[in-house]
Image (cartoon, rainbow, N blue to C red; front, side):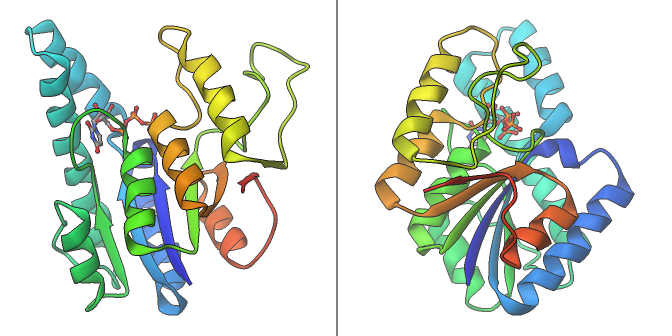
Length: 218
Ligand code: UTP
């Protein structure tokens, strides 16, 4: 199976955690062709805030964010046995590298979106069978469950329904939506099966082994 994983930067808070992910991903890459796109996490957010305060515009901030995602990608790639150590700058390079390696790890590509969208574009480019979105929540909810106790989790949702949900959320300033709107649009047109789930190493293994957790976007 060809798998693309979008791994939020929040993972990169400690050596042990990176090692845990690296071990699980190495195991998955033994049986599958694996592509991982790593996010920028706290470091990206802090540096972007600094740059903004120094007068940088949003595109400049995006470039800064991309640089951090690439550093995080290096950390994960260096911790993995099966990954290429070179971090591709675009999808063509990523696919080329994958011919010689079981796994390829990369960061962001160009300004204007987050690594969720980068990962969805990569999934479309390489013709992935499965798109995995590791997030800080255990699936997609009808509303923010921390704010509304009546919010319910979707077992399954169509990209079109998700698009409407994300558009509604994004309209509220400062809200962190579960998936980048561009990522959802790419999933809709490419028709790639996606799973949104809590980003624990064990969960990645469970999904690849066919267990139904999180929310299926199809
Ligand atoms: P992230 O993907 O980590 O953004 O990229 P995020 O909003 O923190 O994502 P979540 O919340 O973990 O899902 C960090 C920043 O890098 C820039 C954007 O500014 C983004 O906010 N970036 C990243 C790009 O401009 N292009 C990319 O392809 C990737």
